[in-house]
Image (cartoon, rainbow, N blue to C red; front, side):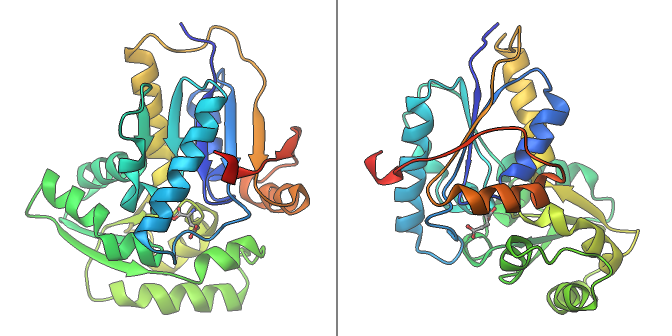
Amino acid sequence: MNNGSIGAFDSGLGGLTVVSQIHKYLPDESIVYFGDTGRVPYGSRSNETIIRYAKQDINFLKSKDVKIIVAACGTVSSVASNAANGLDIPFVEVVTPASEMAAKTTKNGNIGVIGTAATVASHAYKNRIIGIDKDIQVFEQACSLFVPFVESGFIDPNDPLVEGIVRRYLDVFTDKNIDTLILGCTHYPILSPIIKKVMGEGVTLINTGEAAALKVKEILTNGDMLAEKKGESHFFVSDTTQTFMQTSEILLGKSLDFDVQKIDIEKY
Ligand code: DGL
């Protein structure tokens, strides 16, 4: 047993969709979350910068004595998971568990992947899936406007503007006959109802947060590291806490009952 917290970080608020999956599968665990809201987005930056940021994010969570660290960010998981090299506690990124889940889910061997520009340019999901089964065909698409839409609260499935943007990006899959689509960025589950509507019932959406939460559960269970009693969760950001409160209500789909503190991430 280990009553320490699960540490999770993202470039901003998208990682809260991972937190909500951790709450679902591990309701007795407490969480320390860091959202790098002062430096979001990561997805349009160079790999060197993303790795440097990820190292600082990991150092911050280490300073909070967490028992496991989750990169709750598709971009960090795709291009910067080596930032965790040498870490003396378990580390979970989202690419591997989501790729395994997608490879298990597909029936016709055609998988789509959507993510940020950096994620898609890295081909991380594609390479991982082909490593599992070289006969699977993987089709990738960067959806750069999805993150700003979610961050701005444009998520209504009945809003023709949002549907138009989603259709514009996902049109590329029309003739690919995919039956599985990885939402390779942690913001995207918020757009699931619209993505589902556009892709149709025949396409299964893979929520990277769910895949990662199940991996965390497996590691904590096998390592006898589950909490005996729930402690407090703590949330930290690198920019104004006001925006975090507003947007996180959209992402978590409920009012917040926790405190948010601002920290200086450059110190880590
Ligand atoms: N949360 C990031 C991801 O999962 C998207 C936002 C960003 O570009 O930093 O890729």
